[in-house]
Length: 126
Image 1 (cartoon, rainbow, N blue to C red):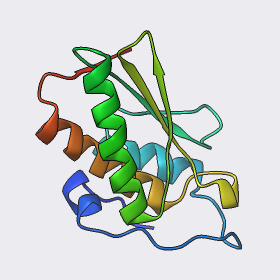
Image 2 (image 1 turned 180 degrees about the vertical axis):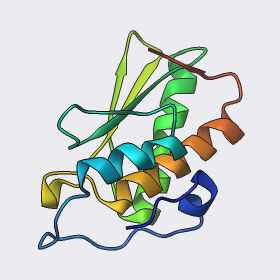
Image 3 (image 1 turned 60 degrees about the vertical axis):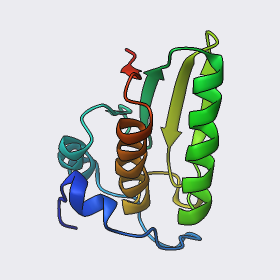
């Protein structure tokens, strides 16, 4: 598995994953995180997470809807949570393998690109 830049990840398309493959090794996932610095890796290396603060609830929901369109196009779906009326939590894992796959990093990079281009006033939330 090669470590890829955010730009390289956004050029890729998710591949179907119905299980039968191993999750990314923890050292690979840690290294790949450099391409998506706004995301955090779980201690066990099974998921990645990002939180974003929007201007208001409507903007947060608009972002959820755009992420939903992206996820459908990639056939790889994050867990999305709005809390505090404008904080969007985004979590990615490949459920079929119980851990991370290249698909998670691809979708994370594409979500970053979407937020940067379509929601320029959104801010990273700790």
